[in-house]
Amino acid sequence: MLGLSVLLARPADAQAPSTDASSERPDFSGVYYPWNPNAAPPPPQNQSGPLPAPTRTGPTSDGSEGRRPNAPKLTPEYMAQWDIVAASRTSGSYEYDNIANCLPPGLPAMMGMAYGMEIMQIDDRITFFSEHQDALRRVYLDGREPTERNLNDPTYAGYSTGHWEGDTLVVDTVALTTKSYIDGSSPHSDQMTVHERIRFIAPDVLEDRITVNDPVALLEPWEWVRTYRKATYPNDELREFACAEGLRDSPE
Image: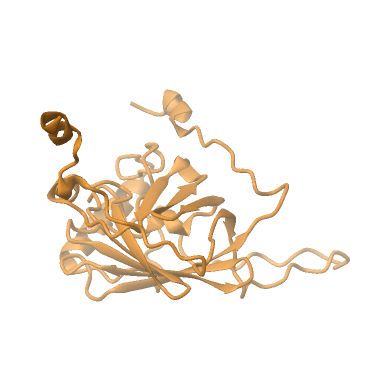
């Protein structure tokens, strides 16, 4: 019997960290859409005459009009890389366009989605699923830390661990692939990390305060705030984003 007990026992270092559940933690579960509380209201329906031309708040994503004023401040080396990306996209090439190549948006760009996002929450983890590109990330809440294997296998979503500080979810993400971009076009190094503070700022309104650190690619940490509003039936259903189907018609 002793031999059987030894075989069935899990090594101490293989046990999952214990979970400290708390009923006081907020429940983020649900489907959310981006929401801008400062957006201008739509014009009245009975307005006469032509509508005014839309106001452009930033350049197009192909880089043809330069960088946004609030874009990450890149070091000269990485600014030169951005120039290459911008020139390529402006020419119509897909070489540096992850979205056109059906690749995930990566982090933190994933959290700036223009589509819906579903949050699934249990005691030991929170899963974020974006309708855009079917992008997925998990935040582990049970005290585990990234292993050497995780750190040596960077991915688009990276490896995220989190903890609660009162009603705020604090998340740190490492192991992010350099094949992704910070804000959709700004390159980064393998030393980039992402820090987030996520909380409700009003009923059903979620805020994500994002800080990106990269001592190699950034002149200073880049901060970004995203706000989402929880959807209700029947607008709480996400659609499949079958991006791979589009590759059939893409240029070789």
